[in-house]
Length: 103
Image: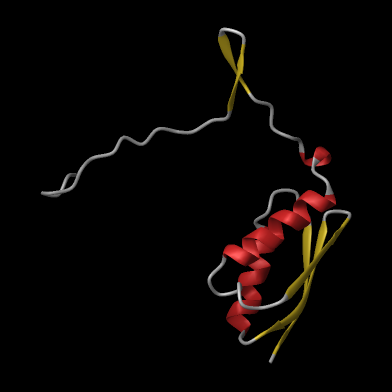
């Protein structure tokens, strides 16, 4: 449905491709076993920094054996839950141990 004055933009699924000579091939995606704890840690930290609710808090993130540990302080239980959701949404995380204190 198009509302007057709006432009329609086609929605095209985006895939990652690599050019190999004159043809394109689909770039391989890392398996869960290939994702390192360090990569998971970095992705969680970046997600916390980007999040408007959590970017002002110092949240310590450590990942061991694909288990994410969150430590630090937040102001509300919502922010604690938000940090948990962000960490658990990162690919490769098996479990989140949320030790954030609500102050």
